[in-house]
Length: 140
Image (cartoon, rainbow, N blue to C red; front, side, top):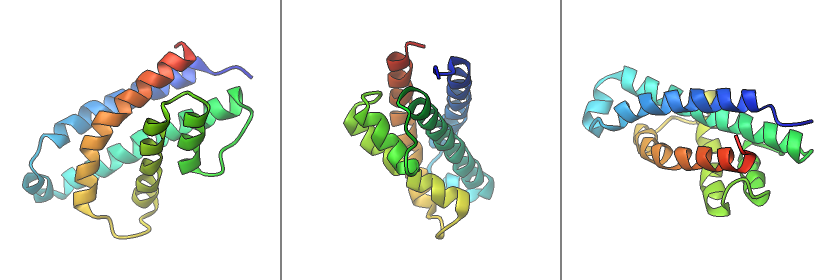
């Protein structure tokens, strides 16, 4: 089946909207970030949504264009890199975000606020690169 460009463009739009909100939170000092539990909750939710939508994009591309289903969320980024939709280094970096998404969504372990706060900067740096490569590779 062909790629559903409408679906991918909708996911990209939603990711970009969340990135704008995340950028506001990233400008806070760590002390200010910790001063309101709402800041932590917002950051966690935005990160979870962004990562989840990238995983959705990965699965859609791999299942529709490559006729394969990744074994897990981490592997979805690895496979996207190996199939040349992303540079391998970026794909490997993004794959680590799958673990963060799982911790946030399922609360496997206590969530370290410093790690979440640090993830804001990584997300704002790497996700636009991810989106740019996906758009380019799919000619959206």
